Image (cartoon, rainbow, N blue to C red; front, side, top):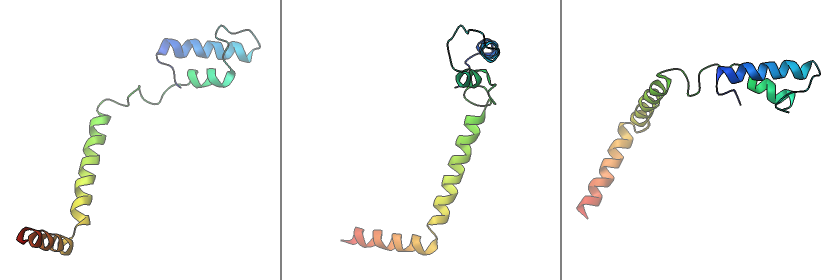
Length: 89
């Protein structure tokens, strides 16, 4: 789990250095946990600004495209015929 803030990340980095030099740490965390907290996140929590909006737009466009392609003209005419038969009954 990456750090919540830059200050926490720097603190965990200092703790990691203390741990590696054999000194006692304030947190008592393992070296692996400290390494995980001290590493910098690729993007801020929640992603880059606007990325959620872009991703949602991509998903909606892909879903609409796949729906239109999955039901070709033959499938649409069969579905229309079935619904017409159902209405007649």
